[in-house]
View 1 (tube, one colour):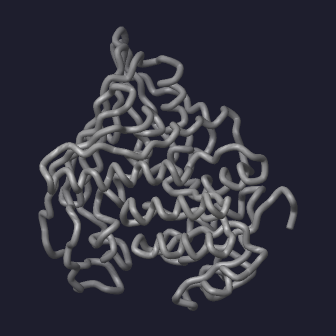
View 2 (cartoon, rainbow, N blue to C red):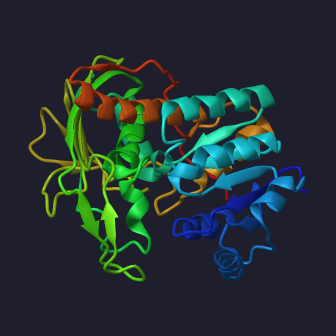
View 3 (cartoon, rainbow, N blue to C red):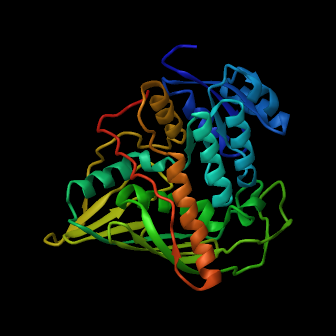
Length: 365
């Protein structure tokens, strides 16, 4: 192995694995060595498509001493188990969001990683893209003054009309908050820092969904999690945020994220993407101004956080999409669900550092 690169093994070769496999091979500090899935045919097809040298069982991948980092792309219900198994095997691990289906399991992962002196990284890494890094720089440079409030909206009608196997989106560990709200909340923490308290109202609007996509068209899904959540967050910096996530809305005409400051407003691009546009309107300007993007990674760069973690492993220092960030966001999401059930605010007890911004001109290619 080149001392300036680390070997990666992929566990879980479903829909999201394609973009990871496409991107990971482009980073200079990563070498995708093998992939595994409980469906061997699926792993074989991915390996053939992306020229991965080895296809193996999960057990064999974990036993392979050549693998340095496991990228865990399994369904949310399997995230914690696979992370523990990877850490037990002495591998660093990066996991698709969320870190686990609950904070108890997530906390156990981080404790075990600390014992083993291994790294845990968690998606999403879209906040490392050009749009959200530019937004962060504008806030840090004072373009809108002191942040006072924020709004975020993720409005859709779910995934059953396009995803080939959408049932897990309506099970524990998913729903609009855990599946999509995680992008918005990660962006919130990146832009404004950690959150101290949350409350919300939520509901299951449709208890049963019908799959409209192939190959399971016509099958029914029993919904187990809230599908419309309206939440409020208190930031440690003093700002107050509002977030609405829904799988129950056909159409909406609302911003993705807006940050309101003492001297103006920042319109932030879709946090499920890496690019722009980024718009600013200060108190003394007559119209919105589209700002030039200050950073790279404009296009879909999923897997960037894995390369950033590899950089940190090789060179020292923290990685940005950390397990602590993932736990903090998970506790916030869990708090929304609990707040609605219990009818009261929920204190957020976990803390994470506000991720360091990327330097302008940063590249891992």
